[in-house]
Image (cartoon, rainbow, N blue to C red; front, side):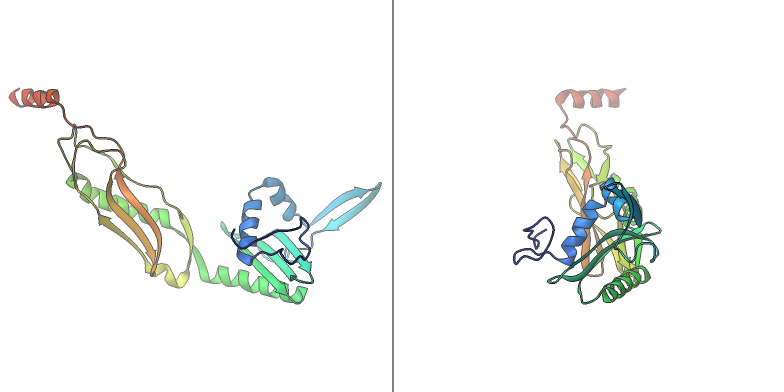
Length: 241
């Protein structure tokens, strides 16, 4: 968060008290990992006792219980900020957070939030990038594993792996799914022992159109020691036998 500055705990207008729609979404995303907050913001009504009197309080989020999948998060209003709404939605495992700030009326806030939410679910789809990458890596590995040479290595039967990467599942605009491209570029096939663990063999990149989303190295996942004199002797004895 680089564009937020909080002066007061209650959020009322102050000259140096500000944030952005994106950073409110970051806060909401973090808060929803806290079970108590997650439980509270999805509750439509709740009964409390105040000075011995029962009272029902109602969540001010007008989309809760109205729009499919809405499960939070927070309404807001000050004269400076206008009508604001941070909305969390889940549909078929696809989670989003929509933020509307500065609306003139509650009606506009509601309309704009619904429009954003429905646009996302109509135009975006979750894509299992991990599945696509594993398929491409497996094909590459079958072709290239035996082409990796380790000169003077104690053994040549090595294991290779793909480094960890972000975005196992990613939301992609439906029109751009066809533009997902995975490329693997060889870096080095020939090594001289000793070879350290995580020595780079190749680089995998995943692009959606012109945007590079994933960049991960393919590496040797173990250290390969250099042969010693006794290893050569055993090899010679094996040849004689």
